[in-house]
Length: 235
Image 1 (cartoon, rainbow, N blue to C red):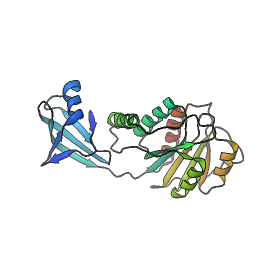
Image 2: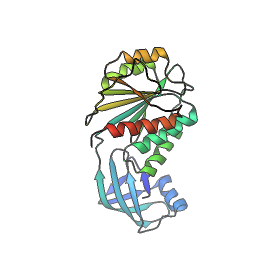
Image 3: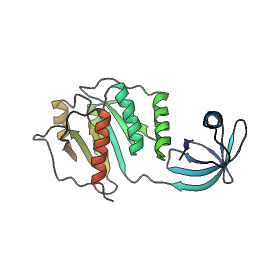
Image 4: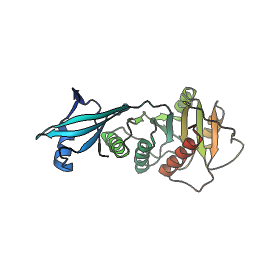
């Protein structure tokens, strides 16, 4: 269903009013008509099913048909060793579609660039939420170094580091419980350095997960690792 993201939409007596650039896009580009249905998302867990009531030159007036409010029960975040720019943008889109809470960009030894927060990232997030109908906005933290990442680990119940090799660091017997706070760690294209892996292995609640695969692109690795975690989560 066609959706639109409005963080602070105007609501009055069961009616939603859309103005500005969003209204102009729907009227001039999409050419939406009265009677059509539209889903309004606020990025905070609300999904409002509406029907277009009337349209003037600058505004749409929508009747509210159904309001759904969601609570994010599973907390799944991603600490990402910075890949190339295009790969990072692809990860943003995938993370929205997969329902991740936030991305923590990490400057690692093999990282390729440092992202600058820009309107482009917000536009990527908005278009991905609209495409997937995800009611929660994705957060992108400021870039940190590996020591900064280590200091964040205590706020999570499980830390899952996905790697393509199997050695003495690998830990087994992982059980994910409902409402566990989970952090996935995925390195850049060159992976983590030996020093970074040793530092990570010394922390509590860290699990090294072996992915028996060839070298994966960052965006492919994110999708596969999310699928692995989803399969472990209780129904």
